[in-house]
Every structure is written in structure tokens, then in C-alpha cells.
Amino acid sequence: MLELRAIESGYGETQVLYGLSLEAQKGRVLAILGRNGAGKSTTLKTIMGFLPIKSGAIAFEGKPIARQPFDIAKSGIAYVPETRDIFASLTVRENLEIAAKRFGGTKTEWTMERVLDLFPRLGERMDNGGTQLSGGEQQMLAIARGLLMNPRLLILDEPTEGLAPIIVKLIHDKLQDLKAAGLSMIIVEQNFGFATSLADDVVVVGKGQVVWTGSAEEIKADEDAQHTWLGV
Amino acid sequence: MFRHNALRCTVLVLLAAAALFQALTAGYFGLEILTEILILAILVLALDIAAGFGGMVSLCHGALMGVGAYAYAILSAKAGLAPPVAMAAAIVLTGSAAWIIGAICSRSHGIYFIMATLAFGQMAYSYVFEAPVFGGDDGLGGISRLDLSFIGVDLNDSRSFALFCLATLGAVYGASVLILRSGLGRSLAGVMHNEQRMRALGLTVWRVKADVFGLSGLIAGLAGALAAQHIMYISPGLLSWTVSGEALVVVILGGLGTLVGPLVGAAAFVLLKHELSALTPHWHLVVGVILIAVVMSRANGIFGWIEARWDGRAERRAVKAARKQKTKEVLSDA
Image (cartoon, rainbow over all chains, first blue to last red; front, side, top):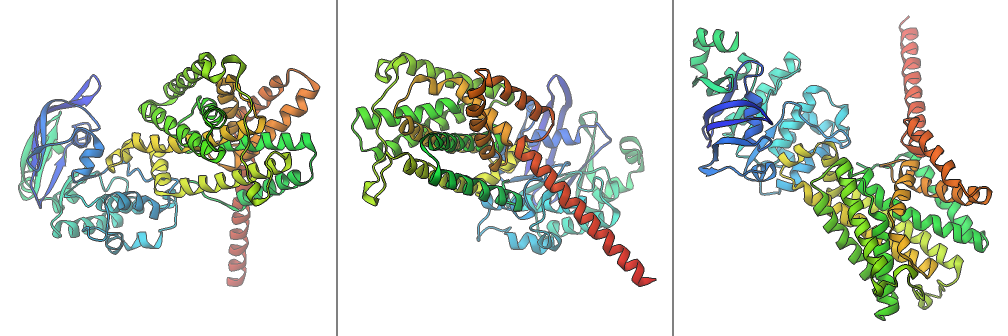
């Protein structure tokens, strides 16, 4: 579904990715793991067009990916960033409507009603401002806003960052529901247990390259790889 | 995103009541000052939409007002169009020019955006100043006001014209609120907060900025058409960057990004100008000192300062009420 071939990318003069290649399959969840500074978030930002590709190629559904973030979003990829980026001056409803008005409609798969069924807590806080939400509620809102874009691929950067264990479990269950519904996902995550219990496939990134590839079951069994590349 | 609260509504009602009272009771000079305030208020509302809510600090809004004024003057006085048609055409023309400027400048930010808009403004000023069709340095006279005699209103009467400008300002304020609360306004709030995030949500950011700048230009064009009718004479000075600078001063003085603040700023600025200029020719110095004081106080203008105190008082009340409630609970438990 999404294929990265020998990607080199980074921030200005600073190169972070050195020939990184990976593939996300349709209807499956790919977890990208790695230590801090390995290049996981850089990979996502490169996919989303926020960072220029110095060399290599990215294809989405067999076609070269668009260059601009808004065209990439329109092509069917939703991105939930680590910072969540909830618009502080807008209410929960308005935050959702930004995506719903652009991508939504009554015939689309994800409607406002459906995302509120998935995250009933948001329904109770529709008129609250973005800054009045807890970290968990902000994460739910960020995922809900991504779903309202009716994506064929949902990309999540560190969805459990800074969340209490009970909220991590809730987010895990919701993402499990999305996986069961057949939504393709890429998840960058530091929480090894969270990522491997959700993912079908795993790639481990180290120093800007893929250093390990396999299934979630395989990485759970490979203690050497865990120790060498993840410090688990 | 813009929202009304009790304070904003109260200040709006007070401002409207004061303006209406002045329009109904003032003499000729009072009405002239009131009309000047009302037209400036329309211009600064336009600037507040672009700068306060869109982060597009413009130094060409004076020029946009000038484009509206000249377009109205040429179309009505020289091309012979009926004043309502000329006014509508002038507004649309100014809005279109602003949309193009917004589209070109939308990829720049901060000081570069300011400089790019300044360049556009100065280009318009130079062209109008030198082109004979616009009357050059002499300007253009013989501009007529709208004819509303079919509803029994004579706009050549100062009082009627002031009331007409007040009604127009009310309509512009309402339209501004509608714009800011629409889908476009929501997108603009998102762009102000995080452009990159909005791009990842599939938004064409430059288009949103251009649309908002275009709408802001429509309002500036309306202010220009009214200014031309007010004085019935226009000169290239109307397009000068100093007019844009003054409008920016008024918005900052009143309260950037509050809509109500610029109205307060317009009234304060024009009244200060008239009162101080009677005392000293160096009235700009006093306005400058006030502006520096406002900026150094870190308050968002006069209205922002009031609003911050109002919010602080409401917060203190809520804390006090919560404490009282807790004490009651403790006492009842005991």
C-alpha cells in the first residue's frame, strides 16, 4: 500500500534517513520502532511531505506520492502527530468539523456520528475548548479528526506519549477496533508492549536505516534484536 | 476563533449607543468627526480580520482603501455609472486586487509579508500619483454621494450620512462575525495556530489566506468608497503607507484580534487626534507615547487590557465560590 525505497531525508543540512526502505501492507498495522533519534518521526514527516526527499521514492497505492502535504492528505493518508496539534482557539466540535467539512459527507465511511460512537467522551465535551481537554482526550480528538478525513491509511506518531496507563489501554482498544475494521495503519511508538500487541508487522529503525524487519510475534521472540536496537 | 462574551456585547452596545446619540444630537463638526471615526472603524475591522485573526499584518490596507475610493470616483464621476453600481464595482475591484495580493504574499510570513504588502501599496500609490487619469497630485473632486431619495434620505445632509455610515459599520461588523465563525474562519483559526497541521488536514493554506485577504479588501474598498463620498474629494495621500500605518496603530491601540478593540481604537485615535491637534501640532508624539505604553504594558491594546482584567475578576469569583462551597461541605460534614 505504501512503499518507501532508499529514502534519504533530514532537516536542512542534517541528514537523518540514510537509504531507508519499508513497506506497509493494506489492511495491516505496521509498527516502526527504534530508539530516540533513530529517525522514526523523520520517516513519518518525510512520508507526509513536511521534509523534502533528497533521494529515493515513495509510492502510495502503486503511484508516486504527491509532494505537498495537502495533496498527500487528499490522496487518502491521515497523520496524527506526536504533538496532537489540537487547535486551542476552537472547540472540540470545530476541531472535528475542520476535517469533516473537507472530507466528510453522509455517504463517507467515517461520519461525525461514527467517530463519536468510537469516542463517546468527545461527544460529552463537544463545546469545550481544545485547551480544556486532558492529554487522553486530546489524543482521542486527534485520532477522531484523522478518521474524519476518511483515510485509507492512518499514520500515528507516538499515540501513547505522556498518557496515563488507563488511557493507553483505552487508546489501544480503540486502535484495535480500527484494525478489526480493516483500516491500514502505521504506528511509531516507544512503548514496545503497546506497539507489538497492536501491530502485524514491525520494522526497527536505527541510525536512519531499517535494521530489523519481521512480524510482531518474531520481534517479541527475538530478545537479541530487542536488546540491541530497542534497549528493552 | 471569534466569540462574543458579556464584556464584548456590553462594549458594543455602549459604542453603538454613543455613536447613535452623537449622530442624532451633534452639530456639523461633531458629525464630521463621528463620520471620520465610523469610516476608520470599517477600515480597521478589515485590517483586524487579516492581521488579528489571520496573522497577515498588512501595510497596504490604506492603499486598498484608496483603490476603493478612486474606483468609486472614476466610475461614478468620470464613467458616468450610477453611484450604487459604481460603489458595488469599486468594492468588488478592491476585493479582487486584495485577493491577488493575498495569493502572492501568502507564502511569506512576518516581516517579509509586511514588506511585500508595503511594496504593493507603494506601487499603487506611485501609479495613482503619476497617472493623469487619476488627477495626479491634485486628486479628483466632484464626487457625489449615493442617492437614497427614493426612501426619503438625503445623504448630502451630514446627519443622514453619519447615520448611513453607522448602519454600514453595523452591517460590516455583522458580516465580519459571520466570516470569522464560518468554515473559512475556522480554517483561518487553524492556519493561525499551525499551518503545517492544516496542510496535513488537506487544506490549501494559500487559498484560505487569499480568500480572507480578499474579503478584508472588500471591506477596505467599502471604507474607501465611503471616504470618497464623505469628503467628496480624493487625493493620492489616501493610498500612502502612512494611512496603512495609522490603521495598524489603531488596531494595536484598540486590541488586535478582538473585532471590538479596533472599534474602541478608532474612536480613541480620532478623538485624541482632534483634541490634541487643537493643543499642539505635535499630537503624533503623544499618540506615539500612548502606543509605546500600550505595547510595553503587554496588554492587547485598550480593550485587551480591559478584557484581561474582566477575565481575571471572573476567575477570582469562581475560585472564591468554589472555596465557599468547600467550606460549606466541610462544615456540614462536621
